[in-house]
Amino acid sequence: MNAKRDQTQDQILDAAYQRFVKYGFKKTAMAEIASDCQMSTANLYRYFTNKRDIGVGVVRRFVEHSRSLAEEFTQAKGLSNRQRIEGFVLETLRFNHHTFSEQFHLFELVQFISTEHLDMAKEHMKIKRGMLALMLRQGGESGEFQVEQLEVTAEALFVALIKFLMPHFLMLHASPLKELEKQLAAVMDLVVSGLSAK
Image (cartoon, rainbow, N blue to C red; front, side, top):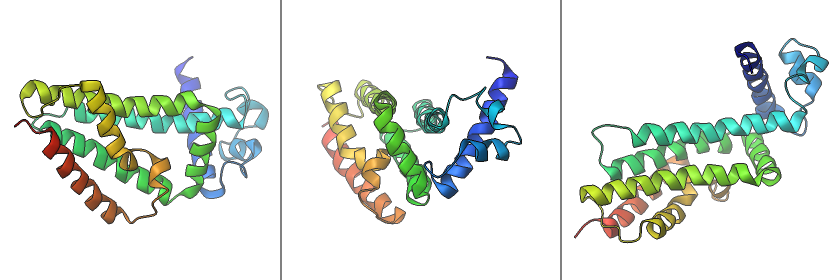
């Protein structure tokens, strides 16, 4: 795939994102996305097979955002592993709250694509579990945490933080962001108390 094609696809995804935010996935037509990109509908089909394919591309960007955020906190210098975990979860919470609580049409898109492409939802969770497992392992190696069964502990930590990490759970609790941030701080205090090396 050449750079021009990638650039055009990005333009299409940008236009589709704006349409999905305003009107929702179901009420957006391929012809409208094409018009926003100043191209014919026939030309649009050269880049994406159908609207669902475009929806997958938009949701794929959310997955890649999680990957980039995990890498950012994994590689951050001068932070404890608690600060890395808490920073990653907090930034994920803020992103999810802004993106989905304040733009509900996008959450409808994520629900639809997650149902149609379960592998993408699993990949999204795997990224977040993997980041937590890495931080736990590094915390164990540095003496910051006491971790006896890494995979079991990582899964338990993911479950403890899932409300703040996954938009599906966030949307079940229509709480203000400040309240969710306070809840996260309390959960982190509890978790780190249990993980801290004695």
